[in-house]
Amino acid sequence: MSSGAVLWRMATFLSPSSWAVRQGNSFLCPSNPSSLKRIPRCPPSIGTFRRSLVVAASSSFANQNREFVIVGGGNAAGYAARTFVEHGMADGRLCIVSKEAVAPYERPALTKAYLFPPDKKPARLPGFHTCVGSGGERQTPEWYKEHGIEVLYQDPVVDFDVQKQTLTTSSGKLLKYGSLIISTGCAAVRFPEKIGGDLPGVHYVRDVADADSLVSSLERAKKVAIIGGGYIGMEVAAAAAGWNLDTTLIFPEEHIMPRLFTPSLARRYEELYQKNGIWFAKGILIDKLEAGPDGRVATVVLKNGSTIEADTVIVGIGAKPVVSPFEVVGLNTDVGGIQVDSLFRTSVPGVFAVGDVAAFPLKIYDRMARVEHVDHARKSAQHCVRTLLTAHTQPYDYLPYFYSRVFEYEGSARKVWWQFYGDNVGDTIEVGNFDPKIANFWLDPDSRLKGMFLESGSPEEFALLPQLAKSQPVIDKAKLRSASSVEDALEIARSSLQIGGTV
Ligand SMILES: Cc1cc2nc3c(=O)[nH]c(=O)nc-3n(C[C@H](O)[C@H](O)[C@H](O)COP(=O)(O)OP(=O)(O)OC[C@H]3O[C@@H](n4cnc5c(N)ncnc54)[C@H](O)[C@@H]3O)c2cc1C
Image 1 (cartoon, rainbow, N blue to C red):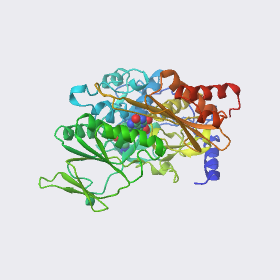
Image 2: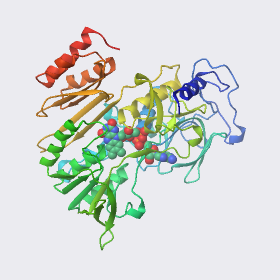
Image 3: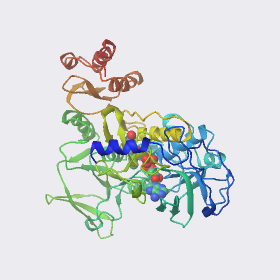
Image 4: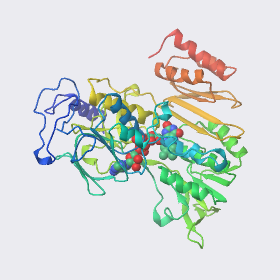
């Protein structure tokens, strides 16, 4: 979609419409959806569209009508629920329709503490329900009950009628909504069945059921092959090494984390992985996965004709947004996902999308983006619900932030924890020798700081990163290049902030 088209679409989002805006009062209503009364047309008092249903304020949800429905019970849903509660708008009004069997949780844990070796206290639910990842309350299934939030477990939405404002779930429930938040996240990209993508012993890690299945394979595994050198691949490889398994990481690029790491930065991590006994097969494509006599995966056949033995294979080759059955609200063809404006409104009044599935205007870099990271899932959900429930109409102004943590289990010789803020564009300057820390600075042709990566920083140093990436100060490249340590480099960047010249 061209930027002109995007601007046009956003302009239509922001113009007044015939849809009623209401601050969430509930009214008694008959259970027959055909006799539902919409709030009569009125000029919106704020630039927010919200469909309103007349719904009984009862936590029993005896009828088919829900005032607010969230589809997807993942990271964003947990934070959205918390925001509904904070505004006193959850009890008897909010329904979460989830595909999973468990209440929302902090998904990143699945390839981190969840995969710790059995004797190193692996994380298990209910330990990491949202919103513990940001220091919030642990929202167990009881928490949802106590707050009058209806959660439909293992009952994904399979059909959507935009005209009637209804959702049909796989068990056949028909739900009529007032406002709808789509937070269906992403699904792992799979290898086709015909090349062995569905063989027993081949794993994809997206939810807790996947992680459980992987743990049961690791318990009897000897040789593990991990396909993909991104986040999932790096985290699962580090975990498998912790289990003392023969581990090979296979990917087509020249180095790990090619979308973020420079070759030099990647080399440091690869060396650390190799010290932990992990093998690398780089620049290599997969031909197929073959089963052994027991029907389980046994061999990874590479395009170059060679083979790698593996009784457990983890495929981490990316994820794609789950837009079905909501395509009708409008998709973004450039970055994928459901197109929204800076308040997470889709082209259909009263329908919002947040988290991984949302293609939103990334204001700071003036482009459309989809961000598959937990920080955005949390913030977008909170921003969307505040917009929906209050007169809050500040456009979402997100600063991209990614992190990863590996080798964190007790007894590990070297724990790894890095954070990245901003945009990895322009020239890079690397400072530090990875022992104990390393930093990377991305600077544009005008010497403005665009992105920053830091491994093993102190809390104060990590806290400086977003300030720098947001302000984009002009930095003396020669001075930064000659920095004697990461601390020195951060001080140079901090003083550039104080001197001024920020955007
Ligand atoms: C293994 C793993 C590790 C990660 N590690 C990191 C990390 O270290 N750092 C980081 O920043 N990010 C990480 N992420 C990404 C982060 O977890 C996601 O960005 C975040 O979970 C997105 O939240 P979401 O609510 O949009 O989607 P999700 O949390 O994926 O939730 C979507 C939910 O919707 C459900 N759903 C889908 N379709 C339907 C339907 N039709 N009806 C009902 N429910 C449906 C799904 O089952 C799922 O429960 C990781 C992701 C994974 C999978």
